[in-house]
Amino acid sequence: MIRFFIYKLFILSVFCVSVYGYASVTTVKYEGGISLYGKVAEASVVLQENLESGTYRVEVTTSSTGLVKTLTSNRCDTFVSEGKIVGGVYLPSKFTKTTTKTDYLKRVTYTFNYAENKVLKETYLEELENKSYYDISKLKMVNEEKLVKSSKKKSLDMKKNDFISLYLNLSSGNLKVGDVAYIDQKDSDIVSLINQNSFKVSKNDAEDVYCIDILNSDSMFFTKAVAVDIGFYGDAYVKKISEHKTVLN
Image: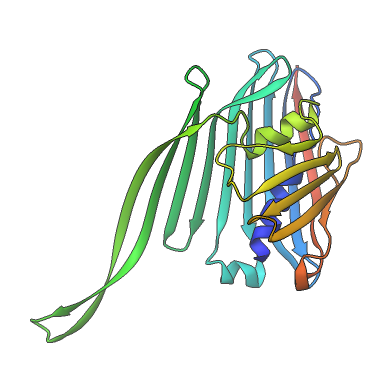
């Protein structure tokens, strides 16, 4: 539950971006926490934009820290969105989500086909599983670890945003106040834009509802985002620790 709220805060609030210069690479560090526990997660963001080729690439990496890191088996999540900028609109061509834990890897790739108005979802999974069997030669039960791999594909209806491009388009003024959609969104989940500094998130048919408020500054990236009163956990927050930008002329 804690990891869920921190993850949502990173993804729903990290992209308050405006474009400066000809081409740029910006690296930002964040930390996330819960008032009841303190710091529980870290994130890094790398934004690359090339105005000549009209392309962008954003990579977000989040990981748990402290006790939460142990409880989540060293979980690390990486999100990569890459695509084109057409008329000021960010159009993803590929979006990849990768989750790693101890003895576990899951990678989900979304490939956008605008000509056919479809998105191909490909899921790859690696996981160590414990197998028990009776060894007749040893006359006893034996435990054995086996790496199990699987993959599958699915065609989805087109949604012209992933988690990341959604907020790049928000910062560019391409989204309207109200409900916003993204690829592979669950029917029971709703994300609503209240204004440029506030989101409302509804999960599991409104079983869980919370708001995220964003504090902006003169920088490209937000200073702090807060979700107030998350059950008995207290307030969840994400705050910027550092930022470095390189502009290439």
